[in-house]
Length: 246
Image (cartoon, rainbow, N blue to C red; front, side, top):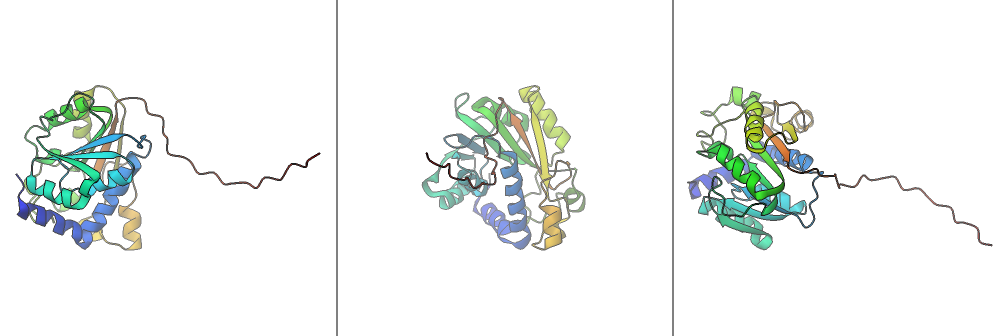
């Protein structure tokens, strides 16, 4: 169970230069993945919502959001960030307290890494999701993992106990839970932590939402139903000549 010290450590990481840079790229990745999902009037549950950084992003994207976490300290931080914009519940992601198809979408973002039974958590997410699931994870195929690893993780020890995953493993777990449903993978932050800085060349490298599975943070979107993209494509307006009367 994460206490107030863990919350402070978590928020201190995202308040720093490397952490805030990483957070922006992670949000860009998730925005890219869900860009085709209908959002207005749709609901999303984030399992392991922590202090609400991504809940806020999903809310800003137009979704009605609910956050669930086992840690009361994390939920207090999320409540301070979200106010009345989100419903916040205490609970275990491996045994969700919701009925089948309760939400349109479910997100698990760097939360499987800390669960005793991550496969059960994925099965639960799919059970309560009617339309789709997105899973973000710490990528063991990344340069970030190769150079930092668990014992030297820059988040001041909060990720030392995390189970890092490969894209292959996440996809296999999703297929075991949901069958042969469409999966889409993207990743960001392919460079080492020293390059997670707001410098043009590093932004171009680390901010590119790549289909290659080698970024430090990766995510997979699982579509449970056929969803037609609804994000409008802007067209250049043309002037229209008035039609002569008479």
